[in-house]
Length: 403
Image (cartoon, rainbow, N blue to C red; front, side):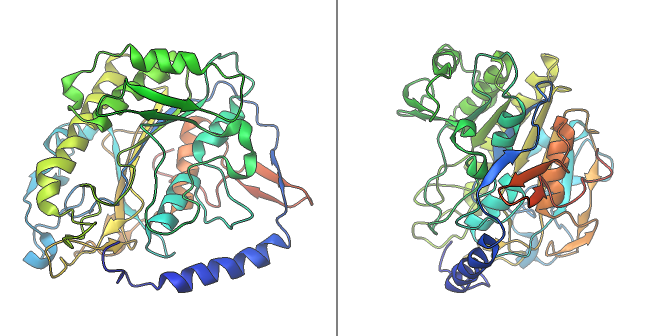
């Protein structure tokens, strides 16, 4: 979060959240759960959370005709979709662009800080302290609770996201749905995902040994890249094959003191810059996503598995004075593949600067509804509250051109 100059005062946001919490709590007491959540035949999902917020301009939505202070250091290259360009940082994805949909018009109007974006992109909503909305994986686990599977329905790896700067809910958990639908959390030692030091879940009767065994017996494939993220993507596929319904892979566990998508280039704890995109971050994602997509297709699992890749926001169109990019929730890009969605689709566009949606704006609620619909879950399904108040899983209709 750099020097904190992100166009929104954090104290104002936290004060506003506290006020809204007080108001909401008057009519949103303890949640009973999702109304009749029985659908064990729903599709699988692998959710790649691109922690830190990838720059739209330096990945999926380059602006080669913009001034240098906007277009940045990277060239644009052709993709497999006629007339659609990607950044040169993602050549493997460009060559497979006909196999996934690109949403180029994501945006939100809440505070451009990691925590709000993480909530929005993992739950579809902003929560209050007393009323935390559930992660997609917890909703999936709720709908799959009546299946015959002996393995957990929701797994997060290589670990939960830690501190991103503000101590508030990040949308990683079951929230209102309760402990039964919390994710199984893995922790590994060193750079080898197979060295599992801890595997936990509040519910004691889950077969966590099956998860441990599946990962411990993996032979890692170099096509995924020799990184924990690549290993986690390969492990996610193996877990889906073993019966897990929803796997979240956090590309990074924090935005501090390591190279991530959070490219402020401030020289301090948030020192990631666009050279890191070229040399590490983009190749890490390019290898892992491409190999995962290829293997899902080769194994005949792509039609039954939704593959999502998205960050919590984008980056500022103008390079900052250090040559990096700061937080920007005005527009960014995300990927959706599999589960019957059309490959090669491009949803929406941004303006000439990569600053705001030019057409077909997609907010997090629309993205959430699209995820649910693609998995076979009705996004209008209600979450019932104690006093009879209910809210839908998503506050919007899905993206009509995709589902």
